[in-house]
Amino acid sequence: MYLVAALFFFGIGYFAFASFTYSEGSRSGWLLKFSNRGYLFKTWEGELNRGGDAQQDGSLLNNTWSFSVLEREKEVIEQLNKYEGKRIRLSYKEKMRHFPWQGETNYFVYQVEVIE
Image 1: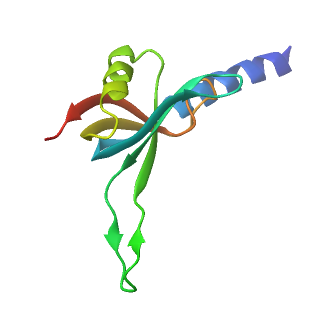
Image 2: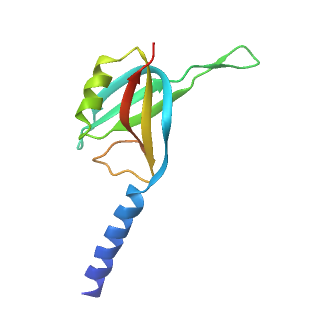
């Protein structure tokens, strides 16, 4: 009985900890890809190219940022499917942890704005 109660409270505590918003902000760049992927849980994942930085040796440092979109964010999913290859600004919340059914990253996008 105590073990069940301890597991129950641990589960609630972990869920509260994982749902805590660690940071919030926006990033802009060119949308490289956006897809619905996964084996067991299909999640929406994308990559944003924030631009490269030139190094002293002449090479270019790749600056991509991976993000996830929650399934309930239907409007954001529709917008991102239209904006591939365009310069956009994404507003996001970084969570402490993510669950497998939410996405592959801790960064969850909730708003999209086209920059032109």
